[in-house]
Image (cartoon, rainbow, N blue to C red; front, side, top):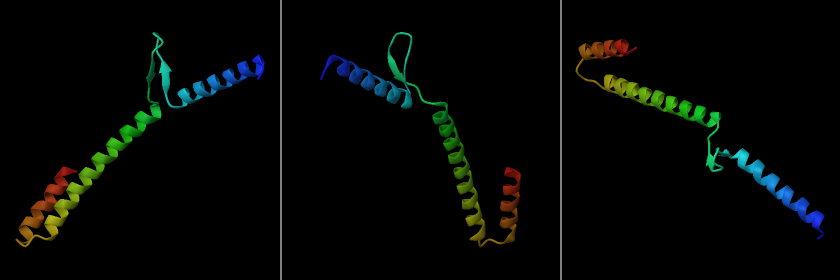
Length: 90
């Protein structure tokens, strides 16, 4: 391998490494330290996931109340109270 091929191979390896670091979110700060910095898409998806978890939790609570209302044997008085409490939550 002559020196020019070696220099070319080093440049290619460094370039591929730089592209991979940028792709996975590794950036250098002013001090030259490398740190992972998540993309805006990562934080947006995390926010969306949290919102969806909250929504699923609320829906599970509503289903639990509806199951309790349906299986209730005390009569229509309690059914009316449960329906009104559901209306008040919205």
